[in-house]
Image (cartoon, one colour):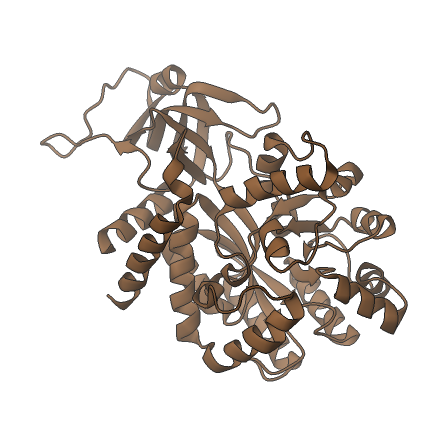
Length: 437
């Protein structure tokens, strides 16, 4: 297991390629990679060749027999294997024959350390699940050590299923940042601000101070985008919500928040404030560019118009919403209105995994069923949505083309074992053993 982890880390540090899916060319006795060196070839760090390249660029190019040239952390060129072979010489070459080369997946909402709460409480509605199980468990167990161990396990699970970037909301985010960097992943990490005492802050003011220190520590990091994460409108008062938002705006970093996740959240907002959660945040002046709202299930047409007007992105978490019976986010309406929508898994405690391929599949199936229209949220839309919301989280849309960061996933065309629950349990057992090694 240690060797496998080193291979995964090395591959991600080099090119954010999910390991174990391609064959690397063998070195000669002299230690150099054996390959021809036609005149005029430019040396690069890595060439991934002979695969089906799904570019996700503006033209939606799919290149059969394609290749990608990567130098350091950047994509240099994308084209056919012959084109790339003539132009570039890789210090390392991965033969991706029979594989798909696609952009790395972006999970736009999760709580990485909560993999350690997987299966803690099932078959419950959100507020009962939170108040009777999750919040009490966190009060007893969350610590820097807990967060580090959970993030290491989450990183293994995300790498295995093709995720290269994730947006997180939790405590001790500086610990999550260090483990994320060690795994070679990218992340938008939101330091949580919440009204009641938690493991890393006894007051909202202390949480805001921690968020500021976290931003200062990681504001120039190449892999980590620090963020501020006010938990939700139902766990924070108005002044604290705005203090968190103002902090994020002062530093120019993202704001992550749960929004309109359940019918009860919306009902309570209407009863107490005579307005929806979206309208309440709009009235505070909270909404705007750089806000990424998780869930957005219980929204009206007027709410959607506000989110579109303010440039707010929405993270759609279909599996978590189904498990907690929270409802179905109106994704077709969001898309029709021009709201940027990304996909997320939520934490493993409410999913119960971090598999973005499964999230794409469930998102597509859920909205076909909900609408009665099999054309709604087709494969192209689901694959596109797994990056779209990242514009709010990271400020850029990342296709697989020249000049972009080299985050990619290489996997077989047909991989029935990827979602086999028995295999996942066995892999998780081995991952747990590695944490003690």
